Amino acid sequence: MMGWSNQGWNGWMLAMMLAWPLLVAMAVWAVVALTRSDRARTDRQTPRQILDRRLAAADIDAAQYTHARALLENRSMSEPTTTGSE
Image (cartoon, rainbow, N blue to C red; front, side):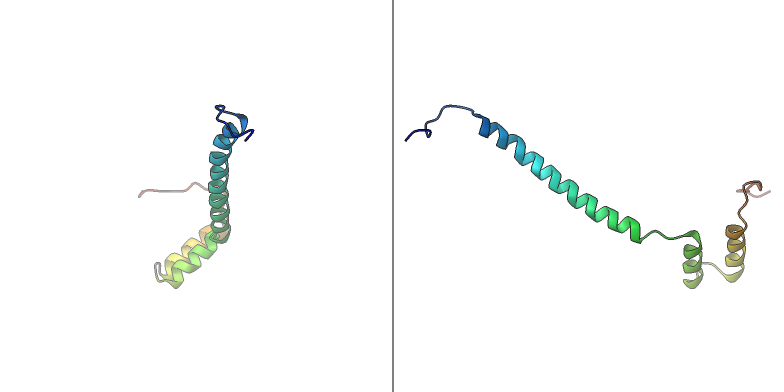
C-alpha cells in the first residue's frame, strides 16, 4: 500500500510530540486557575468581619473587642503605632 512504508520522522510525528505535552500543560493550568480563583474570592473577609467572628468564638473578650474596633474605625496615618511595652 502506498504511504504506509516506514520513511522515518515526518511532520505529523513531530507535531504530536509537541502537541500532547502542550495539551496536558494547558489542562493542568486550567484546573489550577479555576480552583484557585473561586476560593480566593469567597474566603476574603474584612478586618471587621474577622473581629466579629473572633468575639463570637470567644477568642477575645468584650474589652479587647471594643478596643480593637475603635482602632479599626479611627485608623489615622498620623498616629504612630506601638508594638512593644513602653
